[in-house]
Image (cartoon, rainbow, N blue to C red; front, top):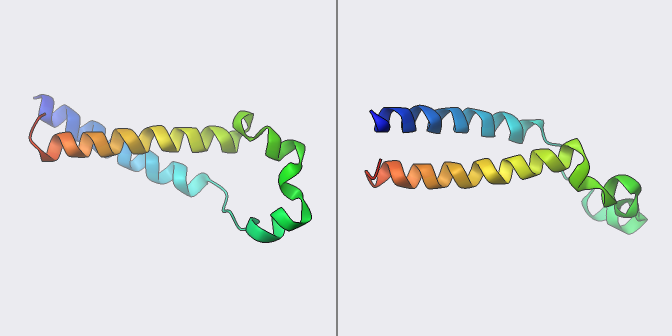
Length: 78
């Protein structure tokens, strides 16, 4: 029973993680952005409070949960 629940949660995390990654902006500003000083704007300094910052944090948390749950399911612990 718990194995079925863990598998369903694993699939939900996989779908949500995919959607969140696709919602994030690309990092195409890269080198030209850092040369012109765009990184020092108000938006860049307060990125943690922005929607993009929250998406990145959510991505990190879901990625860790995904890996841990995948390991637990593959080793047969759950």
